[in-house]
Length: 446
Ligand SMILES: O=P(O)(O)OC[C@H]1O[C@](O)(CO)[C@@H](O)[C@@H]1O
Ligand SMILES: [Mn+2]
Image (tube, rainbow, N blue to C red; front, side, top):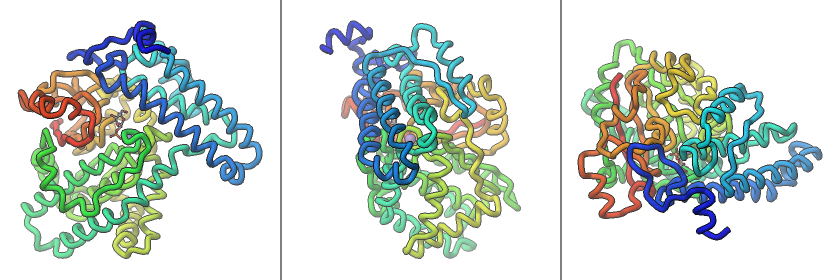
């Protein structure tokens, strides 16, 4: 369809998304437009290609009936892609996962802004991933198939060098931990936060499925990357952790996970460090109930990652895997039951209203760490605040407890920047917000 026709039909506006309004894909100079028009159709096509390529393996594992179901699923995904490309209205879902009512009420609540280009970008992209899973739910054999598994698996297996290098640095630091001063532990903790931040670059939905291999020795690169941290709250996060420190340890930290593979490894390192140095009594992991945004962690990904580490020929990785497993066994690390809220369209400032139990649960923690770009978009509700709006203000009352975000910037929204910094970066590179080169570590007290 001619560009012009498309522009009028879907009311595309050839402008940047305006400030003080939700991001919408209808703004042609926004990343949302490029995502809905170009990135998401490619992601759906990749799923179809992968299924076609793996057909015989899937039938071998799941039985002959799966062959017919594969045809059905591929057909449905093509329909979903067509709906996306022709700006169709969101259709209700039917699901046994417990979020059917939540999603269908949400769709009704959108009124006329209930299509891929007219709705808030966050809603459109999230709806596409929910519908994609719903297609598999409607089958018998393919119901639990993780159609992103190969890509996630590769994100781990291509990161072994980096993982070994990181573990070597951590083991060296821990070797004489009892001689470490609180300041030395604080300084290393802040490095761990930055290591964790840059681990978020490894997101396959951003790379369009292309492999994202972390650098061979991430720790050694940290200082050079400091210039790319455009808002640095590491000290505030450390002060919060140090302040919550007790003997015996009692603090609870929740990590709201993002991507699997190397990023999940850096989350496990951060959690392990908090326990190892008595900075917390327990660290909870909050993962996704369904395959999500290609890379996001599911319970199965967590299990596979722990087994892969424990079973690795490299003694450092195997040792770390064993230590993690014993921490999960003793309860200092905990994989929380999945909560559908994390795969819902809702921005976090609506959690108290939509899922008060989860809000209450998080408010019992001493610190909640939100990982990645999508969580950041949900913290701001995909609302295009002027970039120097204070971070806390942009949370619109979402303050269950102390929270921080570790996010590489991969979408055109941000808050908490120094006055004028965004303009300076834009003058240098107009695309600075959508390259993943820059990052933020931002903190908000309860
Ligand atoms: O894994 P993350 O960091 O949440 O990123 C998710 C990706 O999806 C997007 O939200 C949009 O597609 C990007 O902003 C980002 O590439
Ligand atoms: Mn992700």
